[in-house]
Length: 346
Image (cartoon, rainbow, N blue to C red):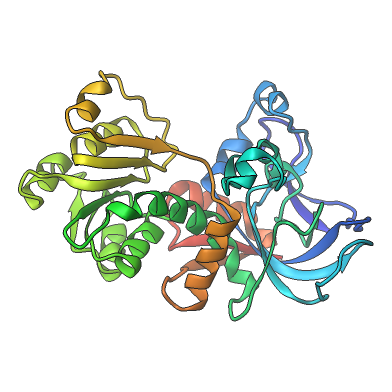
């Protein structure tokens, strides 16, 4: 079968021919319908050996952790599943038995350091092998070709949204910084699931247009105006009860903290490598505000997002590429010229 693999550290990935895997006891083979692309894939392509091997990754491995497909075959010990069932695969690997898994935070299970598409073979192939049935979530009305981005981009965003959701009352204001692949889902959750007022900031006109289409109450082009000044003007100097930063660079970290209201919360979701170079206690202690960051999403987050999509409460806009054009899809992702998320279909 065909697979798009990192074959050597820091070398460009390649579309190669590999043997189709066969499921052993307790394992399942999934026929891939579609696999979403993620910015984290781009980081993996440039990862040096000392970092990759230091966290337990080995090459070669097939990229792709946003996977939808159909159950193709399974080994002994699997029951209650039917061949041909459309499924989405939870993007984060977890054990289900450790303390964090038992508490419902399977997104930080130690097992998740290595997973499908990051250190193990993922979904940019005709088939993907699962070590057990834990990642499987059956689909009902959703097309498995399009479900992949819901398992990571949408579910990761939902995890952060859910942690600030209690603050998003009818008299609250939330700021979304960055309305791209993840931020656009954040915009939709705020409007579909809360009564809070929503301000969206971005530097690209098309992203702001889409945010407005999704129901944003105000949009700010932060390339042309001072974001903090505009937010404080819109909130009568009160600030926002929640800020969801989908960029995470130096500038947005500073702006996000300054835009917080008293008792506000900053969720750092974007992996922009930002550094806050000032006394952090000041902007937090003076307002008794707090800040958090996290990785990925839980199984329950993913289940909730799939249900929202099946109910038509969120939109999942994608561009589809054939597997033979996967390099073009990644180039578009890196250049920021995609209209929605990229999905590669074998």
